[in-house]
Length: 321
Image 1 (spheres, one colour):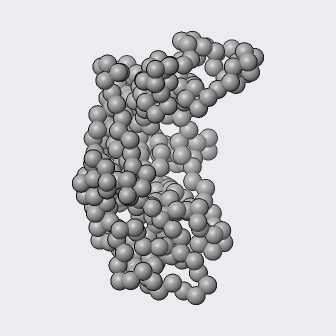
Image 2: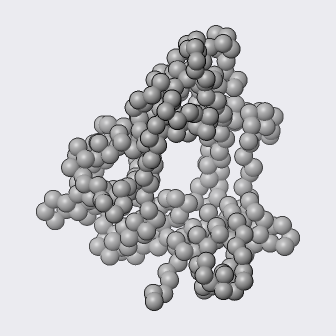
Image 3: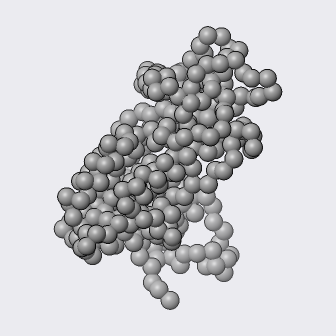
């Protein structure tokens, strides 16, 4: 694959930009699908705003989903709350929700390679809608879809993306379910779940709505998948190939991973070559990584350098000592 042939389309930042660009029809269709989904699933109802309350604002988010090699897979639109307009103690309280540590993912991948275990991936569709809200929340109506007069607001019945408490509410729901089917939560990483019965070992790594399932018995792996399908709306991605902008390839018991797509995106966004095009990594091969090395050499780190530092540290082996 020639890296120079890959170009990433600019994603719209506003509704006006999306509906007046070259992909306007695709974005309009995606917006309608998202709005219809929210209405069909009874996410909110329109009510007069109670006295003394202020509705939070909202926005449309436009994303172009790419495949492993950078090809456009689909145009995706989310209607999200602007959580920064929420008020602590009024429409939110606790917000913490764990996500998997990258070191945990690397350790799991190493274990899979050493013991030739099954490793699959599943995605929870519209995960945050499964969370239970404890607070009473009101939101402005979505831009472009105002109904029954502008004086009405949306009163939430279900959680929505970017509400401050949404990740926590979803994580609590998933945590209760996994514990109910006999998984134990790791104390070292709160997004890692472990189960063992006899010789059967099972691990689940959670990264928001993405799950990595690892087991040394395929029948047991399929049983847990069925449990997940019964509880949530799931998408089965089968063998793990792409996770966290990381490509995973498996050949018998050998497993390799790289972050080529993440690097291509960062290079395309920040124009790392002198000519303004996609070019080579700004850090030389085998460059000593870490803040101390940069300080000792007098070299500062720009944003794109930090991105390459992350992708190198996550996917390249380093010497101990």
